[in-house]
Amino acid sequence: QVQLVESGGGLVQPGGSLRISCAASGSIFSILAMGWYRQAPGKQRELVARITSGGSTNYADSVKGRFTVSRDNAKNTVYLQMNSLKPEDTAVYYCNTVEGYRDYWGQGTQVTVSS
Image (cartoon, rainbow, N blue to C red; front, top):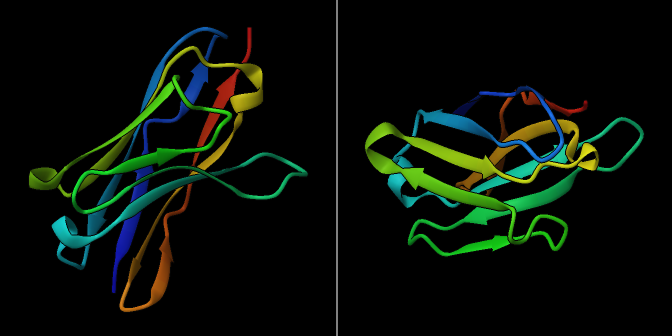
């Protein structure tokens, strides 16, 4: 079993930056690929960024050049650094991983971009 806990969300002004975190437990974190998803009210959940166990990353087109996903295996934590934030980035951000062919999700952390 894998447990995922997101943190670091909050209110930020357009153009600002925020870093959110996902702490994992219950597995060998270093071998897990990790993903960040987001869901805004009335919209479908979408993949934002992903990082493999080897450190390869990919991003949704909407966040390329602005967001960076990284991981710290010593802390069993994955991060999403969000820069140049836009109001349309407002959403609940969720951490995700797959272990043993099963999907695991965190509870989400709210990110609100507003002036």
